[in-house]
Length: 175
Image (cartoon, one colour):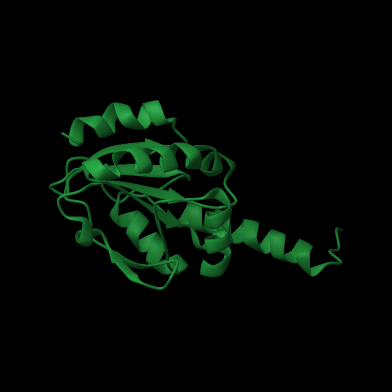
């Protein structure tokens, strides 16, 4: 029998279990492509309320991610680049942070270290699971949804993607 002698080991195991429970408990509730994007309200890393409906008339990339997720970390530089180059065209990227990523303060430090220039929002497990379920379920992170200027979900990417993969779809809606 394995006995953990450190609180760090226990925390790591608890974090892994919570992460698996989060991902397993999200089920596919509906097909979302072609439908109105469900509105939500979460706090950004400074505690300000952010609602999807605040960005009406913008093209939104909604990215479910976690700081512990290797593929999520891999796509961050491309998301930064996309936001930087296309914000003036009406593109907004919103990262919905999986709660197992840490406290808002920890996520803020992570975001600063990666120089993330797009909006990151956080919430409780229940809030994030509810939002993920309203988008048809999220079976893995990263998962990204593309929402057009009329608020319709146009595309979904499951797993990390490159800037070129994202832009093949995004450019259709920036016109």
